[in-house]
Length: 535
Image (cartoon, rainbow, N blue to C red; front, side):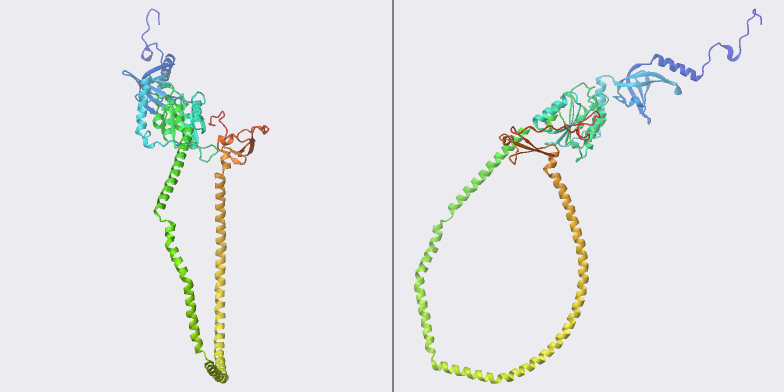
């Protein structure tokens, strides 16, 4: 067409000279524009709805009085947050803006969440406290009694700082005890999981394991700001303290600092030093009290003996004198002893007169007639004796025949009865012998099991097992020494350990040095793995 004439306007889609975008291209361009301009932003607002997906991602809204910003915190980042967003909390979120093309909206990818000031922290703390209190974790009825004198004390704190030194120094001054230390972080994001793991770890120790199970736990930390102490306000720490089967003393911060673990613990101490004072009594005070009670006991015993002696003397005064009790019987004895010779002479005279009267009646003629009569009776009986003997022999022979027949029959019956009884007895004896053997074996087995149990109990309760736990028996001149006053005058002291004896004294040569064996890994102090230290 000629240049003198204008071309007609294009028809249809070719009317304008503008570029065309697909939906994906346009969404990508918007995404790049927003991410390029807002790659790092800090947004302050109130947390709206909060949704924790099954994948672990956290979705929530940031809002103010005019607008709402959708936010997402990915799973890996959410696990590292020191403060989890809760509805109604005012926070400062740090992250970047991006778009979500599937829903044509923009959102914020959160990398960190921090409370917006102390007021927000206190509001969140009060809300969490009310929630845990409603669950009964702070109920006074759940709190356990602190033991009077624990054998082993577990301390959950940091090895750096003056807290652990103050606790050990105070325990050493008042009443030395065995201490197990579980090192933890006392501030930051690692504080809460390490403290809760330490409390649960102490409770999981077996009673008779290689590492002794503590009788008391102390969770301690020095003072600091509310942000520094926030790890002890976490829910997992509070639940671990409330669920501890071992009595627990919380000593977090100074006297004016209050954390949620203080409400869940069995007892709160204003300072770590005060926690050590609550854990053990003063040894010197106990010794003084025992000595005072002993003195009172001796005085009471002496007074009791004196009162009973006085009572006995008072009662003895009411009794008559021995001379008065024996005066009457002594007088009667003298009277009868005076009468006895005359009575004996009169008795002898009466007996002599009786003998004389009887001798008068014994005449010779009377004796002769008596002898003749007796001789005749004897002769008559001798004459009748042969006949009586023959008749008696016949009767005896007949009686013996009858008895012989009866005896023979009875003997045969007795033999048969004895045979049957012997058979039954032999059978019963076999049964009883079997039962006796079984009973003896059972009794011997029971005695063996009991002896083994008693031997194990003896080894457990013996003093040598006590020596294996770090104690020493001190002897001087073959006698056990239990006090400093008894040990000072001794020239040589014998120290008995679980693996041998050692003589100590100024007159003895120094023992050869031994190479110190490396302690086993299970019983030694904590290494680099952070499993705890045994002091």
